[in-house]
Image (cartoon, rainbow, N blue to C red; front, side):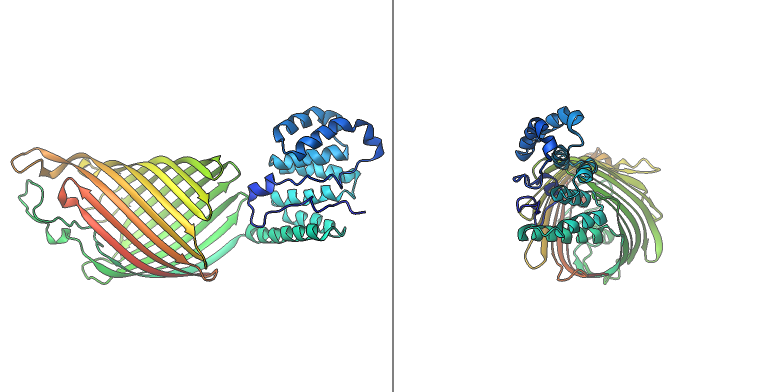
Length: 462
């Protein structure tokens, strides 16, 4: 006897965990038959059935708690208790409820179907396959069979993703940097200063140059659970400028990223250590730590906090070791293939081992980023950021005006614009075109600058 109808299963073709949990098809009671010995005690259970079918989960939970002492062990009660637990995301308890149904009614294929789905959602893919294949063996209707086949395909995809993955690849990038040394671009005379300078010296002027950059990388991706993963990567990169005045740079970066997301919360914890060289000489070592934690407010909108620090120890003459710290709020929302992200973050730069406050600053950064998925495996992103920086001490050289001896306190306004277009014709090949522009406007015009960078990259990954 067939115990499944076409209304028993509904799976979204590209659903998420939330969709799998919340879509509980209960419009038919076929397959939830009870023996005649249960009939006299069914009225309270029918109230629970009605509430579950209407997806009134809060009231259904109250009713289930009220009835559990009396009716646990009856297949009809356990079936709907399991469906309620599925909607609540408690898959382990749902598995126990469905298995209890099958102990007393092994031919109850509706319970076996939901048991297979519960195993899938708890990442027990082998047991999910076994249960769903038993349902297929019962000759269900064609539309139910198609839905189960789609779920089995998703199980196979999830099982492949659950395996630890090793990947290797590389990137070759060519570009042009309009201010590769971070020099100033003051027009006319400088602000009044104690040294009597009226123009920037040659090393302080912006230098433009084409460049070539290469990167070799290896990574290991390990799923920790259905909602959490860990990624470890190693990158070796080099950057060579055409202009002889600019030093070539190399870097080795070790990174680890923990990610976790469920229906209501998600968090990221990336950590990286980098060793950098200029012209083959060790230049600096940096440790970068970040932590973000977000909560789903409603629908696609997430909100949370972000903290981070980057500690740098440098061996380069004239450069100081120190730390860059940040703390702030971030928001993002995804709709119709677009992802909107906004953050507002407090920033500060501190130096180590010296009292040089004219190089230390505090500031506020506001950033908006839009990412979107286009046709033909195209992706694009646009990011705009504004920073306001206030330095901790008076500048060592510049005065308030030409006749004053009172030193000037520096303040900068910084605008960053980044545009990227990415095309991935295959899983192993990707091309990326990028344009970035930075504009620094300072109340001491010696520190004002512009920087335009254009690049084209090609990456392969195996």
